[in-house]
Length: 224
Image 1 (spheres, rainbow, N blue to C red):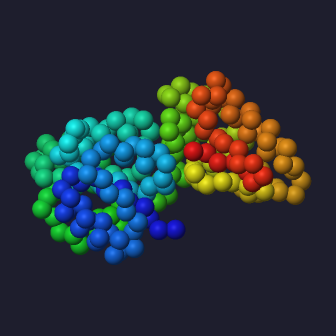
Image 2: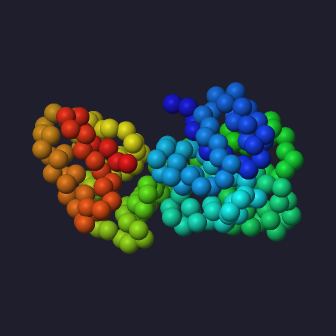
Image 3: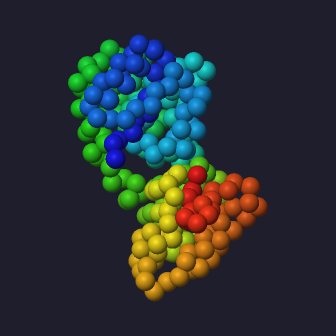
């Protein structure tokens, strides 16, 4: 599966050039001229990297990233900005950036930095935190927070939710869940999966208003 990169850049010509160059390097790209629909895409798509301008219409890029970080965003972020003072660069890192490239820039250097950052962070999701919507799993402490509030879950429920989030928007069959969460698809029944998911849903969505985990009749479940 190809790496998916979201780019937010309000200069249309530069955005097109960035997308063209990254696609030539075998990356998938989703480009935006402003931040209007970015948060939704980050929730809905499996995004590996965010490249963010700072001088954007409506909101300053570093403020937008800081807000995403507060909400649990854990993917790497590269700022690409004409703001090039030492204070600007420091502010970018303090706002949640993992790298900072000043304009004008060399496209080859950008590609090298993209590859380097992706290589460094490719295992981060397995070692630290993983987020989806307002759910935040901390793998180090094995705790779950929903909208910032800690929710007690069992080890099985934690692992089940982790599997769903890592495969967000994909339908997971019951056999797959038995094999990858329970580790045994022969000695458990589908009812075991159904009961565990219903218990998990009660804990993370007690008033049934968020509908995180949906049943795909005859197939399995997905989180979306």
